[in-house]
Image 1: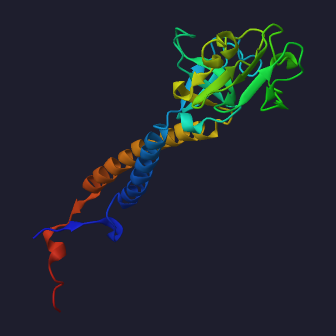
Image 2: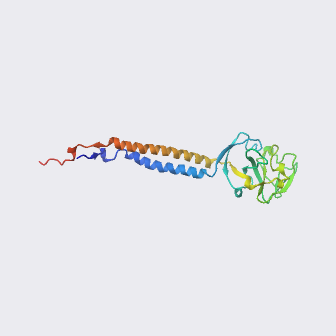
Image 3: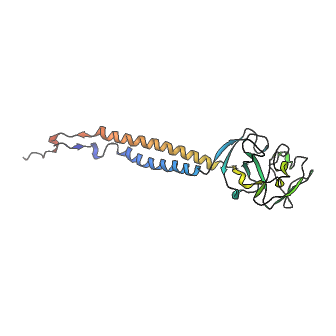
Length: 231
């Protein structure tokens, strides 16, 4: 009669198998989390014009997140689908006013006024709130927004379309908001990468464990199973 014997009383490759059992689920969790959270619509895009200079210069890369109209806030820099204004691609502009707001500016003023109060805009190029030509005083219709570029002297924005519903754009045109903090998308990418690595390493350790178990198993001779002689 023959029986399998294992050196040291432990199955060969047991440590590798334990490591695989730990790494595989961890990798699966990270990859799944990255895929699920990544469906929030984080995306990198290249700035294609000078209209948002100096905040975002032409050629800069930005990271955006998909949002709905209900999530828009004053001051947000958004990507909007406005084919009648920007035939190709999306418009990158800043939301300076929302539905119900009154936004105004006269040539020579030091600032735009929002609901009668000066609007602090440290982001505009050279500190110029206007283009030196256009004056306006409008009330933004509900469900719409007033968009301006930070480079007020070189931006085709709501000021150029004042005859069309006061230059406003429907909030539904927004596709994404620019993120100043890249922490979340970077962590998503890093977590997904680490998850893939853990899956590969865990799978490799699992295979190694199985092979080690088969290779190191030895067969004991028949006499090893016989009782010792009686003296």
